[in-house]
Length: 206
Image 1 (cartoon, helix red, strand yellow):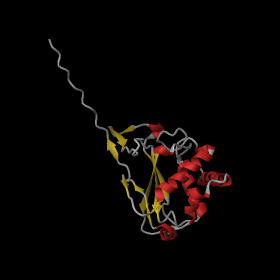
Image 2 (cartoon, rainbow, N blue to C red):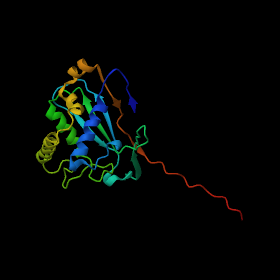
Image 3 (cartoon, rainbow, N blue to C red):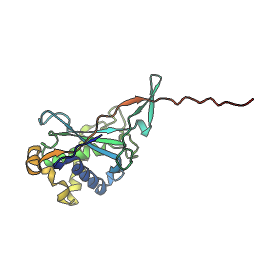
Image 4 (cartoon, rainbow, N blue to C red):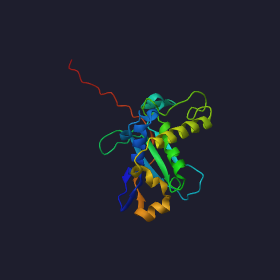
């Protein structure tokens, strides 16, 4: 995990504050502890309005299991911890400048869309719906409608403008106003084989 420190605007710190306020004000998201959600950004080559704008990476398997067995081997997801020692359950990635170059309402709905993926059990797994499309349910449209309602509700609660107004700016405008847009960069976690601890032989006296 690399923290890029520079004069300018700390995007990941700013967007995490937005996430914290959303999770505080919206009952459907109050189960989320942002101390255990790492926020990162990745650089994209262009800002065209297609592609991935943000993504949520769970750091546990189904039902929050720390490991899983596949083809006779046991696997675990690489662990990450905060400087305060909190073990992260999720990593929330934003792709810049693409994310910042959307309109404000789309930015907020993208944030809520990813937060809503977090399991209500907050166990490192995602929210799972019934059916084959367990990530969004049988209807992507219905999922998006829920996200839209949550965004409108949050805005109706009058969150402090100073925590979210930076989202009014696109990437270039933010850079011109504050300088370099920087933040935390976390590499994608690896899935690693679990090394079983060998049983130590104890020497017994006859």
